[in-house]
Structure formats: structure tokens, C-alpha cells
Length: 270
Image (cartoon, rainbow, N blue to C red; front, side):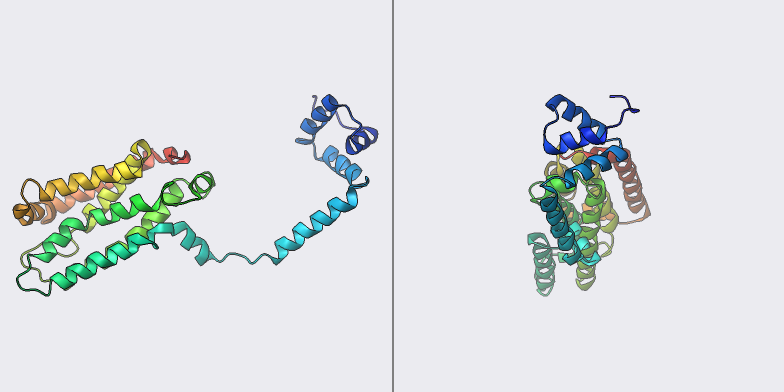
């Protein structure tokens, strides 16, 4: 239909009372999508029919309901965005891990608990991220992922929530444990961040659960296999010293670049 064509008062009235032929009605409806003037003319014609008062009542009820609607606070929106990252079983499991480490640290005959904690700490945020995003974690996942605030933005919000909870809890727990020659309590932070970002970069290809299994499994194999008895020495090589920490910093930067390059992959639900 030509953009220069406009509906007449008579045609708008016939559309409003339902007497306009179906083909002409479809053509008019298509035209109304791009013509505000004709849309106003047809709207006035509809309000002039017997259905007009009913439509007016419905409109008033909708507007009144919208006015009475209690606005959602910023903190409530943030809590929803953080999602399972700050609620549910994962947070409880994190506290159990920290509490168990502190309890074991009180026994003189216990193995080096800080070493064990540092070996497990980098995979804790990875697990939190895996459990906080996806159909398994959010009943409104499909809807949320399709909104402007979904996709990578929502993933990063939940990842930040996971890190904000796990980093201080595990680092403080490590500080409260006897050193016994283990790496510093904060030595796991860069490896944990690198594994988390690598999981985010890999997730669009494999899904969050598989990606987390790959990154966390690789780390655990590196520090625990082939014999857990040598865990302390391997962990020291992975965490101690400027070369090791510089390598992890480079891994963080590389993972962040890969995630930025694949950011559009999060625009599709997966």
C-alpha cells in the first residue's frame, strides 16, 4: 500500500463496525502500523461505536491498576538479577566448606587444611556461576535471556554476585587457618578469576555445566593428580611467585578478551 494513501472517515467507520471487507481491513491494519494520523482516525471511529464505553472502562481500569502498582525497588531488582548466586543451596554449601575448613584447622593431627582449601577454592566460583544461570537455575530463563537486560549482562551480574560472596569468605577462611608452608591465603584469587572467565567464554559453545566441568576438572587434575600426597608441591608451583601469578594474570586478560569477542553469543538462549 502506498505511503501516500490514507483512510477516509467513512472507511474508518466501516472498519469500526465490522462491515469493511476482510482484505481491505487487513490492508488498513497494515497501513495503521506506519500512519499515526489514520490510527487516530480509526481509534476515534471505534470509540464512537457501542463498544466505545466498554473500551474506555477497560482503559481506565488498566491505568488505575498501573498507578496503584508498587514500584520495584532497585535492591529488589538487583536481588533478582543476582539470582541463585546469592541464595539457595550454593551459598549454604560455600559456608559449609568454609566452616568445615576452620573446624579441621583446630585439630593438630589434621593435614594442611589451608593447602586443601587453596586447591578447592578456585573451582568454588566456577561452580557458583554454573549453578546460577541457565534453564536449570531460573524458571524464567527463556524470558529473561530475551530481554535487553538478559544475555551477557545478566550473566556478568550473577558472576559478580558469585565472586562478591565467595572471594571474601574463602580468603578470610584461609587467613584464619595455619599457614604450614602453604601459599598465601589470597594466592588463589587470580586462578579463580581466570577459571571463571574461561568458563564464561566456553559456555556459549558447550553450556554452563559442561564448561564448568572442563575448567574445574582441568584445575583439579593439575593439583590433585596423579597423587594427592604431592598436592602441596604442585599447588606451590601453580600459585607461588611472580611468574606463576603473572601467568594467571595473563590468563585472566586472555579469557576476558575471548569473552568480549563472543559477547553476541549470549544474545541467543543456550
